Length: 151
Image 1 (tube, rainbow, N blue to C red):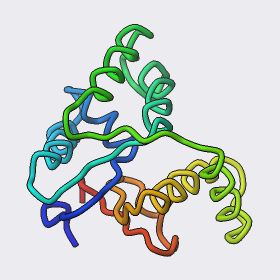
Image 2 (tube, rainbow, N blue to C red):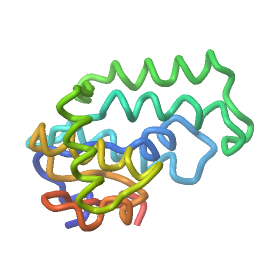
Image 3 (cartoon, rainbow, N blue to C red):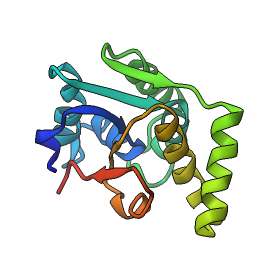
Image 4 (cartoon, one colour):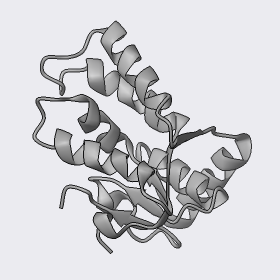
């Protein structure tokens, strides 16, 4: 499946959200188009509070040149969190426990935990698709389909 064929429920990963806020980035327009899918009948887009939290250090950090000020980063994240048609999902203890089980099953360690946390949230919410540049991070997780909007 290609992103432009998307129907149903999908989670938007942090990298897509970041590119949507960086007008000088070559992926900006495609990230904006991806977020605009929320207006298409039959499509529901979601983000996790985890995605929003992950944005902050990336926007103010050295990978973003020039880095955003803390206030700019906060404002971008607030703006995204308020987009009509983009549902923000909370994390729960149940989700964290499910993520740890996914990590144990796949012998996942360190930072990859956070991908499993998103996977656990997606399973809880019956969201089968994640829109991400990092498709390899989600390959092999049963019930999830990673789609790269930039491919």
